[in-house]
Image (cartoon, rainbow, N blue to C red; front, side):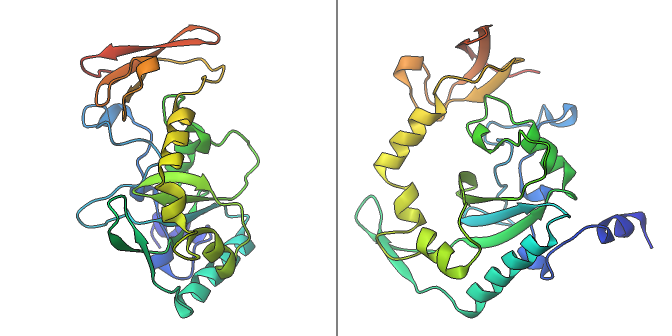
Length: 246
C-alpha cells in the first residue's frame, strides 16, 4: 500500500466522494514559490473557479475534523435528504427587474485534519484579507459551516443540520433566500462598512491588497493596489503602490 493511501485511511471522509472538497478547491496562503504568479483575485480561503470546475454557485461547506465523525454523518444525511426530496424552483427578479432562476446551495464538506494547508490558511488569514472574520483563533477543534457564493464566503451558518432548516434560511421562497439576503443594496452597503472598520490591535508586516471599490474617506480607488502600514498600536494608513513585490 502506498504511503499516501495509508495516510488517507487514517482520516474520516464522506461516503460519497462528490460531497467532498479539498485544498485544491481553495486559494491558499501565498508561499515563496508562487509569489510571482500570485494575482489580486487569489484571496486566501476563497474558492477557485477554473474551466474544468465552476465553483461560483452557492455552496454551504462543512469544515470538520477527524474527531467529528458524527457531525459529518449528520451532514451527509442532510445531503441525502435534499437529493431525494429536491427543493422547488425559485424565481426572483434581478437588479434590472428580469426574472432569474436561482440554484439552492450545494452542500459539501472539508476535513481540516487532512487538508492541513487549508487549515493553516484559516489560522493565518491576514488583517488585509476582507474575509478576516473567518480566521481560526482557537486551538480547540470546532467544526463550522460557511456559505459561499461567487467563490467568496458570506457568513457562518449556525442553524441545525436539517433540510428544512437550510431551506428556511437560504431557499424558502422568492422573498426569503440567499439571493435576496446577499444581493440587496442594504447588504452591499453593510459589507462596505465592515471591510473598512478599525483594524484589530495586531502587528502587521507589509500587507497588500487591491481595492474592490472606491472609498473616499480612506482615499482608496477601485482597482489600485495599496499597502497597509501600521503607524502605532491602533493607527493604520494605506499607501498606494504601483506594483506588488515581496
